[in-house]
Image (cartoon, rainbow, N blue to C red):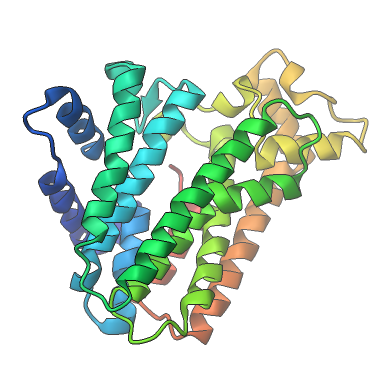
Length: 319
């Protein structure tokens, strides 16, 4: 995170890092302990636990009750990343070797499975009258994320995927956990569940914006800042907001190469996408979604000072 936001969120991130260090289990089984401990120490934005903590702080003026839920959602997110890396055959995550590369696929699968158990163990230590609701939401979140991943996998063999299809998929795969982060923070100290639906919708808007920004960065980021090679989506012929949006535009405008993936070099694909205006369209989509999130926040009195800084970071981030 850039600028002053880094300093502002540091105490929250530091708390999560400490909790993850304490959480790391299986000290007598190095083949399970080491990959989990390794992944927990990889640099990350920790956006989801940050959201959980500031949500609790916004409504209840302190976040302590939400710490178990914040750790749980980060661990659940990490599980999805470990398994995603296997499915996508990625060699690097956050600039470091992926678990299945550093160890092997079997170890990575087992480590991800163990992370799910750890996430539930941590969540169950929450002291809230709404713990059952939190567990139900958490379980639903995991189910929906898996459904989104399955839908994304199915897209690989389809040539008719539309932008709307893609948005429906990322609302499951990415946005659901962002929404869950808000829900858990609220439920950790709530007397009621009156704002739950609003927080879920707000989180979904933010989650959609977050994923589309990732899609932009794969075409337009600085590789050193991003921590990995750009153009990986194009090289894998992956359906994203950018590649699908380009295909839909090229289908009705003959001035653009019809098959983005058939171009011989990534730089040519990047130039075609820029010329078609897809990157700007994607950025416009992000800003529209974040404006909708801000409107909901105003309506429910979500005024935490970090919130607007966070939205600005999500809109402008370089990694």
